[in-house]
Every structure is written in C-alpha cells, then in structure tokens.
Length: 329
Ligand code: ADP
Ligand code: TRP
Image (cartoon, rainbow, N blue to C red; front, side, top):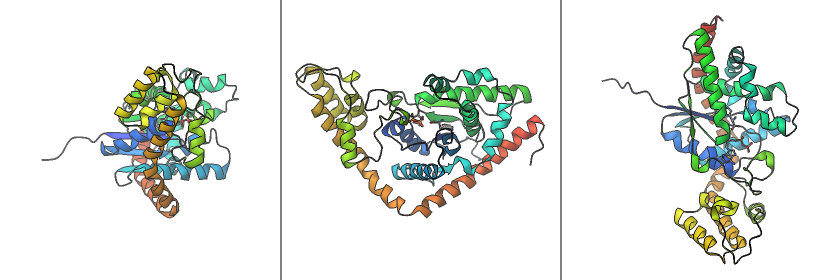
C-alpha cells in the first residue's frame, strides 16, 4: 500500500541582523527546533532581509555565520531539517518580482512593522517597503503549510496569504496558502527595560551571553521602586516574566508566591534569574565553541541545505513563471 499522507511542510527564517537574543529563542528558535520532528522543516538565515538594516559586508558575513552556529548549537539537526542561507536560493528574488506585480501598494502601506519604523523617523528605502513581498516569496516558493513565528511576524504571514490569493485569482491556482503558528505563551518576551526585547532597542540578553556580560544585563533589569517588604505583582514585572521562561514551573510559582507575599526583593529575584538563565543555556555553549572551531562543517551543512531547498524553489518558480506567461527555464 502506498503512503498518501503528505508530510507537513514547516518553514521559518530569522534575520542575521544582530546577535540572537533570548526573545528570539523563546519566540522563534525554540519552536523551530522542536518542530523539526513534526514534518519537513525548512529553516533559513534571511540575509537578503538583513540588508535592509546591515550595510557592512564583513558584519553581515559574521552575523550570518553566528546565527548558523547558534541554531546548530541549540539543537537544529541538519539531518532532519533543511537549513540554508536565503541568498543561496536566489530564485526567491525572481519570485519577489512576480509577486510585486500583483500586489497593491495599499497592502504594503498597512504593514505595522513598516509603519512603526516610519514613526521612529527612519527614512525608508524601497527594500524596507517591499520586505513583506520577499518574505512572501520565501514562504510560497517552498509550498509551506505552517510558519512558526513570533507575534510581530503574524501580519506578514497574513500578507503572504493575500499575495498568494491575488496571484491565484489572476493566473489560476499556483500557490499554496500558509498558516502562521504562534506560541502564545512566549509571543512577547520583555527586554531589560520592560519593552519587547529587540535588537533595535538595545535591551537584549544574548542567548550565548555568559559571565560578567550576562550578570551586568540581568542585574540591570529595570524594576519599579516597590520596597522590599511590600507585595509585588509577578505578572507585571520583567524579572518574573523572564524567570518563568527559564525556571521549572514549580520554581516560577514559588517565586510568584514570594513576590505576592512581600518581603522578597528584586535583587534576590534577579540572582535567581541569573542562575536559571545560566543553567538553561550553559549546555549549549560548549557545543557552540566546538562548532565555531570547525567553520567548514557549518559551511557544508548550509551548502547541502541550499541544494535541497533549491530543488523545491526551482519547481515552484517554474510553476509561477508558466502561470503568468514567462516561459519556464
Ligand atoms: P528583533 O526584534 O530583535 O529585530 P526579529 O524581528 O529579527 O527580532 O525577530 C526574529 C524572530 O524572533 C521573529 O520570529 C520574532 O517574532 C521573534 N521575536 C523577536 N523578538 C521577540 C520577543 N521579544 N519575544 C518573542 N519573540 C520575539
Ligand atoms: N521577517 C522575519 C523576521 O524578522 C524573518 C523572515 C524572513 C521570515 N523571511 C521569512 C520568517 C519567512 C518566516 C518566514 O523575523
């Protein structure tokens, strides 16, 4: 009997535009790694996207290599998942163009992340505006079923569905519509200043921070001025919000109860948090150091992944070219 069940196609990307932080880990990387067992997973380093913020060649190369090391050290298994650099599949750029010819300006103008950047006074370049079209191409070119992401990326997946829909309506069924997958409990990890942790806000704790650097960041977390003896609300303070991510559930409950009872200061809570972060990530540090000493292994993994990814990409791109009247290659 032939097996007709189609394996779930999972896809996600992360931009190597800065050092990956624990917000990226709990909001994205951890799900990516966990889902490599749930179907055919495709994960890539979105270095074309990173060009919208990083404009120095050696920095981009270094950040791309660092992000590859992070993923592999944290447990991405290249035997299970197809892991590659976005730019090793340049077909996505061609598909970006095809999609841009069916996408209204209005759709892109409604993108919240674009509007946020405008509001912060950034002089937008064309690539920042069309960023969601490249992201749609990334997803559609692999016929992805589900895209695990953090909360800020969900709108981009909805826009991807819209773009696929426009193309399908005009040219006939060509693209498969993906679904976002959001892990609600970790959708918004706070940074050391209490805002969303983000490399653009300078409030991050790096996944591989250790020693003094880690200690300074954790002890510097902004807290309110409630005196030690007064009760505190765990849900609304950054220290506990981070602690619950890295500590076992009963330890997190225990700290919450002590905060509510009063007599438990933020300094003590920060020390417990520091220890828990250290324990969570220490096991991955040695592996990362070992991988960093063998760059050729990492390069082989990425090249091999790109080869596999490219086969799929070429097939889907040909389908799109034929549909709209460009001869397949
Ligand atoms: P940053 O805001 O640091 O630039 P990115 O936008 O590159 O991060 O996000 C990479 C991935 O990590 C995305 O899937 C995003 O949703 C997730 N992510 C980023 N910051 C957080 C956060 N503070 N909490 C939860 N998930 C996050
Ligand atoms: N825009 C995503 C981010 O900043 C990265 C990304 C690029 C992505 N292409 C993608 C995520 C395709 C999911 C699917 O996090």
